[in-house]
Length: 210
Image (cartoon, rainbow, N blue to C red; front, side, top):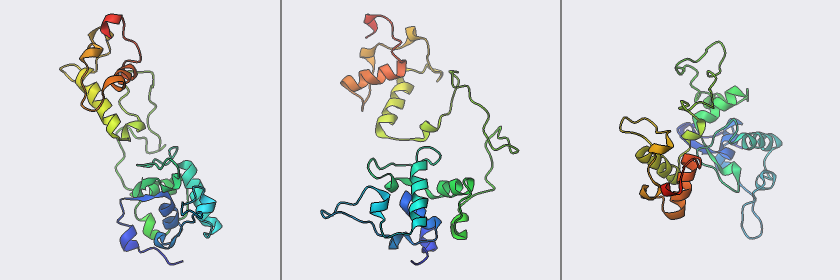
């Protein structure tokens, strides 16, 4: 197979996992075909979908697929075919570097090794300071980087009803708004009630507050 057109692929902000596997092996994704059944449905299993590809490609894609959502964070995930999930190209390159996977220089150039580390980052030991997950002061979780219309509506609901006038979160259940007073353009009815339960962890007190 031919090498990728790096003038094209190096400018891609995100790629599907199978495309990432091909690029990391210096294979042009445009020349990679997928297998399908007699009805024209693409096989979900990697070995069936990419039956004509080399073992090195299959092995690389299996590693990438099983890392998705664990050490590699896709920006969108295909529910049936994980290998079609999308990941930022620069993040994929950084993941390859971290896992010492060989890749062509054209792809390795996407890795910003001189990126300024965040505050309190220990350069001698590349780990973030420990976070106390039991504290109400926790401000960061990797899940916050995931976006969807429903989550945005949930965050809007929290910011509108569960923060005070000084933009501080309200943890005192006595000061929470009544369920019947909650408003959302996206969340309605039972969905709105369930959102309130999630936000308050079912810690509301008294039937009158429902």
